[in-house]
Image (cartoon, rainbow, N blue to C red):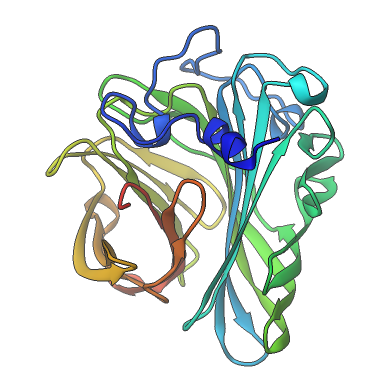
Length: 346
């Protein structure tokens, strides 16, 4: 089939007025919509939800190499649906897209895969857990013990992830509101993965260890029609606490915010719109785009006032829907490392 047509279908729509970023603000008909007070069913909810329009399995990792270099790692599987049903063969309305990346202080390696679910090219099963697209996979006997693999033209990786803490439910017990109009997703994370494995780069193999953060989200209209992108932070502090926070752009000077404070034992406190703040400090030319690559991030209720700086400011994902994604360093009231994703800067 036409790969470009498949990419357009997977992305649902290009950014446009009234549709939100990448069409995620378009109104839906026939799809299920997240409701408050969700009840999750595991391990089933680790799998796919074909009656919702958009879903992802998203892993980012901060790693240290045996060569003394810091690395960032990304593995993402996106599912989008043209209709709220599963289907078989090439007629399935379930479409899949995979992104993989390795970031170093000087390079950013990116690859993308596109696929149909009904022919076995891509999909997710819950028990035992297996998520795949082509020869990329995230799989294991359960959701706590996973092996993650991917490869591009000039890189590859194979790493093991072992959970050392519980799942964390974002928003109100997993119901994550994204706009003042009430658009929302079901959203939980596993921010306690330890990582060990091997990266393959043009100069050879590198053994790595570190930590990873997995995000699971599904919805049908996660954004408002006027929301043009977001800035998402996952921050792991040296003291053991973690924090997730995001800004959703609603205009030149306005945004909708949300945050979650995570204790070392996994207990979480959600914060509503307005409690979390992030302001750009440094703007970098990234392939002709003005992209914020250093931020002042605050969560006053927890005494957080930190500078978040990109390890490699040029970590641009040149994919069907382009965006910025890369590892960051944290300094100020707290220190540590994390990941930053920014969309809507094309």
